[in-house]
Length: 112
Image 1 (cartoon, rainbow, N blue to C red):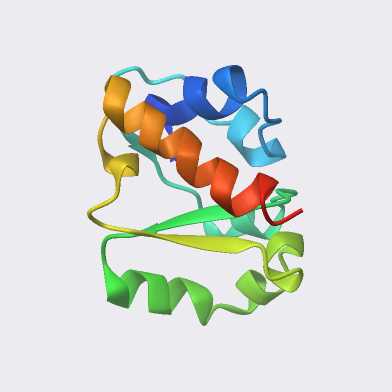
Image 2 (cartoon, one colour; image 1 turned 90 degrees about the vertical axis):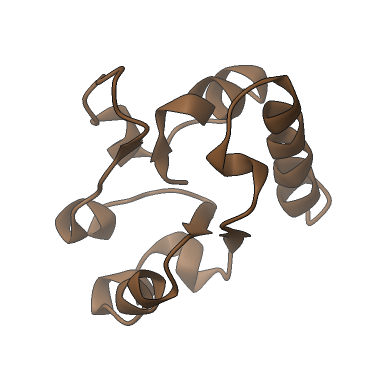
């Protein structure tokens, strides 16, 4: 999961998922839509699933070619869900939150 403040409440309050260790350490900047993660922080992530919102193919390719990427438990377990740039994850509001919940459900609950 990326550190998207808009969807924090959807994922961790509405769906009652547990945030990864690095998410809990991010600053509470209400003006930011995204909080970047350093490679060092990424290397420490303990997430069961990663939702990778891919709005820039070259950035995603750069990230996934990093050695730390392949050592993340969610990556090792093939539990990375790529989200397209036209997804509801990039918006907020009732409909976007509803679609995000459906996408999480389809990718996590139905997979188990």
